[in-house]
Length: 414
Image 1: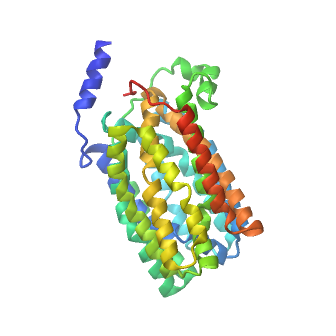
Image 2: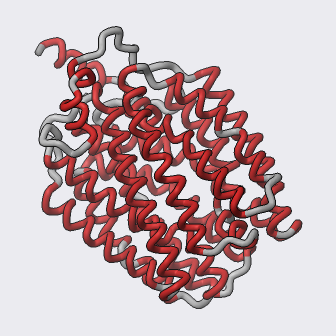
Image 3: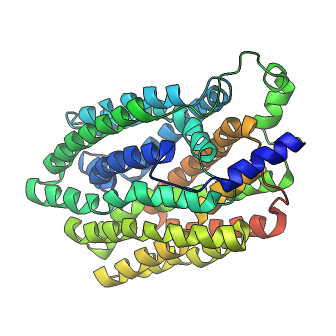
C-alpha cells in the first residue's frame, strides 16, 4: 500500500513537459504525418467519386476498412499489454508509407477501395499508441496533456487543406490529388523515421503470461463488456460508440454536400477545412477545464451543444453559412475527445490499458462503419440532408448514457 502511494506521489510531482521524452517524439512525428495526411484527407471523397465511385460505394469502402481494422485492434491490444508498445508502432509507421505512393498511381476506384482496406491493417498499433501516450503523461493533468499533445500534433495540418486545395485547383482534381499523395508519402516516411530513432518503450515485456491472458474467460470478460468491467466504463464506451456512429454518418459526406448542394468549389471548401483544423487549439483550454471541473461534465456539455450543428450545416446555402456551421461544429465538439480518453484512462488499470483501448476502438470502428454505410445510403437514395439529422439523434442518445450511467472514479488509475 505504501509503495502504491509513493508511486502516485512521484507521478503527481512530475510536471507536464511536452518538450521532452515520448510526448515530444509523438507530437513531432504526428505533426509531420498529419500535415501530409491533411493534403489528401480533405479531398478523398471528391477524388473517389471523380474516379467513378458514388456515396454508397464510398460508404462501403470506409466500412470495409473499419471492419478490417477491428480485427487488428483486438490483436494490437494484446500485443500492447504483453509485448510492449514501441515495436508495433515503429513497424506500422513504416507500413503506412507505401499507400500514398500507391494511391498516386492507380486509376480505378475499385483498386483505391481495395488499397484503403489493406491499409487498415496498420491500425494494429492504435491501442499501443494510446496506451503509450497515457503511460507518459502525469496523472492529475491527464486531459490537459492529451489535449495539448493533440493540438501540437495537429497545428501543421491547419494549412494542409489550403495547399491541397491549391494543388487541385492548379492541376485538376485527379492530378492534383495524386501529386499531394506523393508529398504525403514523404511526410509519412519522415514521421516513421522519427519514431524509430527516438521513441522509448513504456511497458516491459512480460516474461510470464498472467492469469487474465491464460484464462479464456477472463480475456473474454475484457473484450466483450463483461461484468468484470465497471458500469461507468461500459456506459462510457457505449456512448462513445454512438458518437462514432454519428460522425461516421456525416464525415465523408460534408464535402459532397458542400459541392453538390451548397455549390462550393474546392478553393472555397479549403479555408473551411483549415479553420476547422485551427479550432483544435481549443482543446487545451478545454482540457484544463476538464481536469479542473470534471471530465464527465465537459463531455456532456460538448455533445449537447454539438448535436444541432449538423442541422445548421444541412440548412446552409452559402459559403458564409457553411463556414459558420462548420466552425460551430468544432467549437462545440472539440472538447469531447481528450476528456473521453482521459476518463477512460482514469477507469482502466495500466495492465489492461492496451486491451481496453482495443475494445474502445473496436466498438468505435464498428459503429463508425455502420454509420458510414447508413449515411451513404441516406445521402444517395433517400435525401442528402438525412445523414446530418441522424447525427443529431445519435449524439442526443449518447448524452443520455453519459448523464445516466457514467460516473467519475473517486480514485484514478495511475
